[in-house]
Length: 281
Ligand code: FAD
Image (cartoon, rainbow, N blue to C red):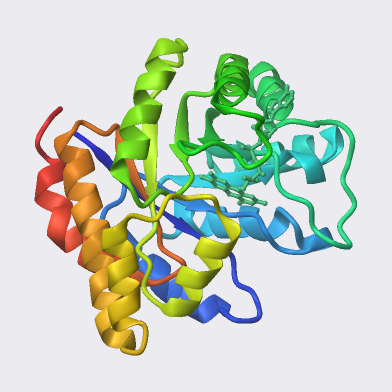
């Protein structure tokens, strides 16, 4: 069976706690394999909000929760505190990341790469399931795909049980990456991260900030519907469903949907692909 999971982000000024609780109630109804909770709030609140929402997902929604942990912004003491909190709350999954530069937020020195924190958690908290991030089209800082795979191999060998990809719009990138991973001896499940792109602002931000290849088919959708929000939303969801149907048909290990806290999007996707997931690989 192929897993289907969702990513949410903790409340911020744009998305309040009530909205998030409604989103989580809707996602719970879709019976996901797990829900991951990002960690992108500011300074002191960093990680505490993630722990709080993960606790809610695990213990109030009764869905397995996965807490994101950004290595750059955590000291060993922070990690020990957070892992104790997670264990106490029966949250047994972490997605370990390096994090990105954030203006005004000081880095800590204990874990320079995601693999350093993964090794630390594997050694000191062996009962946790550990997931890492990966980039079918290469992380922007990697010199080339060889360096990308060498570092990914180090990361997986440090203790990843599975990896989740950055979003991609062209499935051929995922298939090529999966082959390269097999050649490099990276043999953990590679879950595909899929983001339904449902408005122009989101499309522009993604096209500006990430290095994903944009197929002509997707460019045509943007060109035709950018002035028609409802049509663009529908086309964006259909595009993601199309990607997922193809991925599941080609034995992807799992789908992780970047929901952007939009329950309606997740619901539409699940309704269209739920039955496919029941068919074993
Ligand atoms: P790393 O694995 O450390 O890799 C980063 C770069 O360093 C790569 O170029 C890699 O090749 C290189 N590298 C790795 N190891 C070495 C080494 N030993 N020597 C030299 N170079 C090396 N960010 C957040 O802040 N919060 C989140 O919640 C969050 N969630 C995410 C979820 C997913 C599924 C993904 C794909 C990304 C997420 N991010 C999040 C973004 C992530 O933090 C950034 O993409 C970051 O730039 C890289 O993180 P990483 O864990 O892949 O880093």
